[in-house]
Amino acid sequence: MEMLFTVVKLIIGLLIVVYLINIFLKFLNHYSLQTNKTFRILQKIPVSKSSSIGIVQIVDRVYVMSFSEQQNQILFEMPADEAKKLLAELQQTTTADPKKMQQSFATVLKRVKCNLENKKRK
Image 1 (spheres, rainbow, N blue to C red):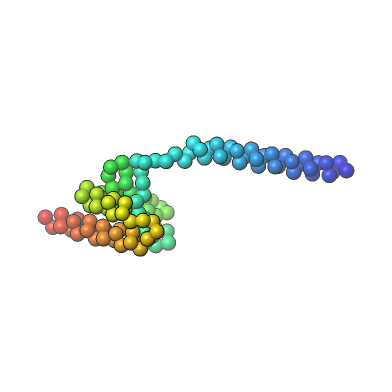
Image 2 (spheres, rainbow, N blue to C red):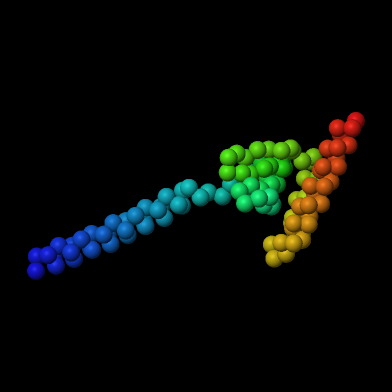
């Protein structure tokens, strides 16, 4: 009988601890997941299993970055006119059409690559 009482106390204690942990995590989540409007990942395309290339907006500048398990690196800053075009295209496309978003991403990368090559030639 005493053994049964000990097991019931243990189960009740465990349930109380789990409930308190749940409340604490909800409280912590409220303060840690603030929406940050100064940093946004606009698009991200996987290159391999552990790396990808993305377009990131930080405040009012737009960067093309590489993301991998070892490091994240800014490849280059997009020119202002290209960034405005990209942001306008992203506002027009919906998330329901990911192929269109990938095509716009690829077009922007091609235009930026051409612009960089032209600047290197000069």
